[in-house]
Image (tube, rainbow, N blue to C red; front, side, top):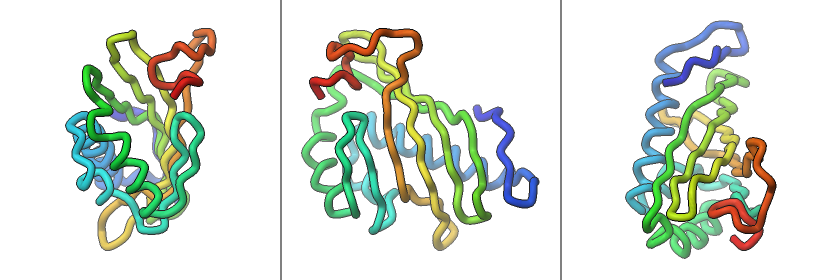
Length: 153
């Protein structure tokens, strides 16, 4: 559960918007763990940008789709991912910066990421707009042997 102190540009917290963002985060977690490619892609704007944990830059839904259709099917075999909402900053009422903690449980051990998602609200729905995934050292030695965020991926 999010406990981070989100603020809107007016300095107020909108619990309904936080709950909608929490639902989006839960949906991403569910569709990723269950390898539901179409459902995952439906969460993006058509002009979204995405930087993967390995640094690959994807521009627009066509590139995000091609990458996702290549890596998601079978990509979660023998592992799971959870997302914890750490902080929300409402840049405008319809734009939010969302900071997450991402924990992969893999056969080789856990790995931690710290995604930043910029969300835009369109037609009453929050959508992934500009997202970047990155590793968290967490006092670990950066190593190519890390299961998710190592250099080999």
